[in-house]
Length: 352
Image 1: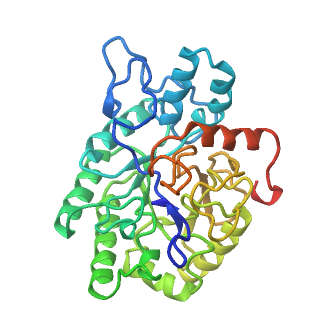
Image 2: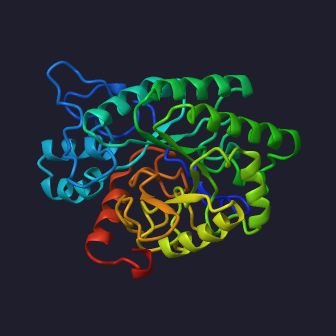
């Protein structure tokens, strides 16, 4: 999904999500790791990547980037491994997309708690997800989604966690997607239910996705849709998920939207916005992009709770017609390009 910026008239970012790909993807599996993130006997200790001092969020050694670093070192490709470590050593999000979500959420949140860090999750299972585009799928119906959301909340228990809720789900009710009328009303109700269930957990923060600065231009309509989706009970909203808009543009757009929502705080995805967007329509694996500001709660911006890497850098937006892997699969050449561009200073100053 989240490459999906503007695939439809105003779509967020393309296959925005960076949804977790099945174990059959091209991402290399680290020695000692088994599908689903479990640890094989004698394998590496979970959380083996360093948790840097002063860092709020959890760095997992089970991300596709971390596994690729291990694989590259095993192949003697140390230069590429060192470049890729610029992604793997930073906190990024764990996408929860299917029935395995409960076990994954419990496992990752426990590891993060042991490391005294906060994990970031993306709940991405709304029915009719991504308007049938690159990240199509989701729960089969409303009842299945409610059960899924309740299970996810229960899995997090009393542990700390931040949850970005359903990228694109609200914005797709306001564009040409076709989620209108009764279908839109059902979606708003499901989102409000998920917010309510997650907020029963005292240490869980919830940010309801609100698209990106290039998508919904009618902020009054967007604010109304967010209110119907339970924003009042959430901690805030998320912007720029899987997109490339500069941090300055994202925070300006967010401040305007916040003013319509009684001052709700927000987070911004800075995972790939180091060079800003290539163009309004270039949402699907656009070339020449760069990593953005590393995840931090020290934003220096009133009302901006964090800059996060919500989209996992290096995971494809979708099969865009140039030989890319499908949405959510790790794509080493693209990951190396993002990291190299950031390291060599090819970054728009306004985005940092």
